[in-house]
Length: 80
Picture 1 (cartoon, rainbow, N blue to C red):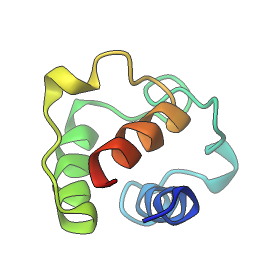
Picture 2 (cartoon, rainbow, N blue to C red; picture 1 turned 45 degrees about the vertical axis):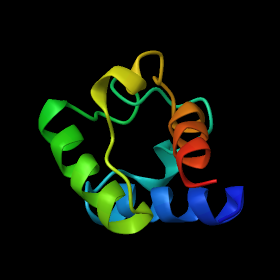
Picture 3 (cartoon, rainbow, N blue to C red; picture 1 turned 180 degrees about the vertical axis):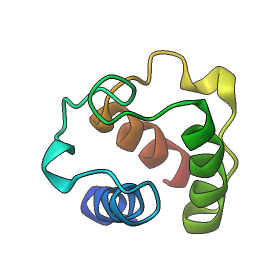
Picture 4 (cartoon, rainbow, N blue to C red; picture 1 turned 90 degrees about the vertical axis):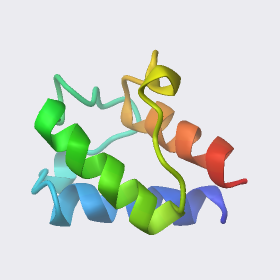
């Protein structure tokens, strides 16, 4: 799966499942501060990522993943 496909899937579930405004989703958007993702949303994200990408997010691997771009980087390293 290439980077564009990953970003498209992530963007789609952020908009559709978490109801985040599309305009807010930029590479440098902070997950918590800019996109408003909280701990309950993160539980949903874990399930959505497993369904869409076929792996489980490990919380310890998410340290330092604070922007949309870094989140896509993380997914890219797991699926490729």
